[in-house]
Image (cartoon, rainbow, N blue to C red; front, side):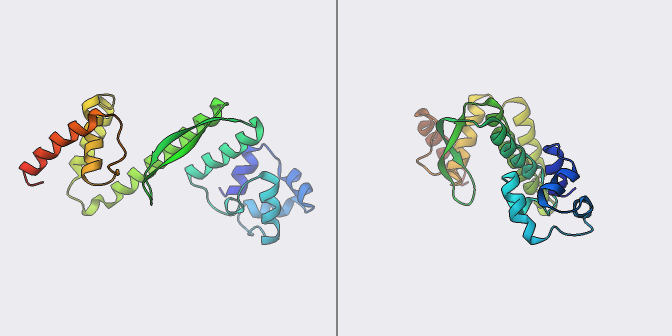
Length: 197
């Protein structure tokens, strides 16, 4: 299913209605949706403005993350949320840094934001697993899943993960969850050093 078909379904818009808005025949929309013709470039800016979505979505096969992003944009148009505040959140990506993330007055928007973040994490985990054909540490991934299922709310687990992130410089030194973390990490790092890790 290409983006246009997904978007029309999400907006509950019949092909004939979109055709009328574009001043073309319904058959053109059918050809686009069935991928028998690409959407002509001249209509992409019109679709972008009409739906309030980036034109890159209309001609392509959408990922689950892109579908959630489109749902979020539709919710924003429908609910017109207001940003109540910003929360600092650590983001891992090309640049690992703290960013201000908006918190909206409509829980539906906050909920879909969390769903998008979860989908991104799942995608990153899948990508990490895809390299495992050449990676001898499959059992480590199994243990990580088991730990996430059983002890994710245990302080020792969370402190240890944060310590490992600092040890391997995934997290900058200045990012810490609580004051006691530094002492905890100091003791763990001594163990690593004692065993030449």
